[in-house]
Image (tube, rainbow, N blue to C red; front, top):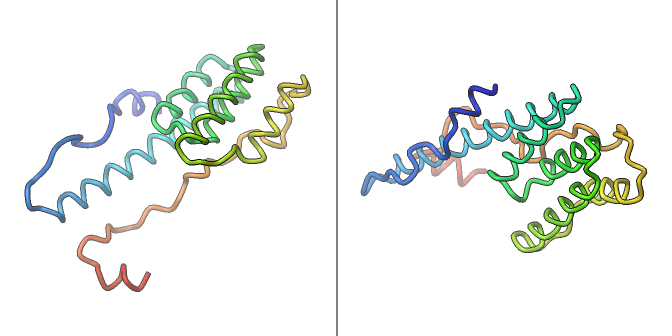
Length: 160
């Protein structure tokens, strides 16, 4: 997985366009989204695995990469907060919550969800012991990928 993450350098064919070829552009957007979701899932899995193995520095690195790619991912912020707290960096974990709160407010106009807020409270009050109530949550952004793209399927899209 680490090699796959190292090979990812952003969206597939970023900036490449074929004039007057909407089907190609739609295909490209579909593939870019697919690879983006794949790399986020791999980063989540790597961070989760390193966290479970108490390799907090590596877990922190992969959680931070997720946040770089998708700053509004609360699951990634939760991972990073947990790892920071477990590695004795309580102040950094609390600062991470604040960064998450600000990003969600500015980008989406929402407040952190209950799990994120509960984790923050546990860390702030010194009660976080790596409990199981919010440990290792599955990413919320994981949706099944369509087997085929919907290019040229206007009737099917209208039915959906």
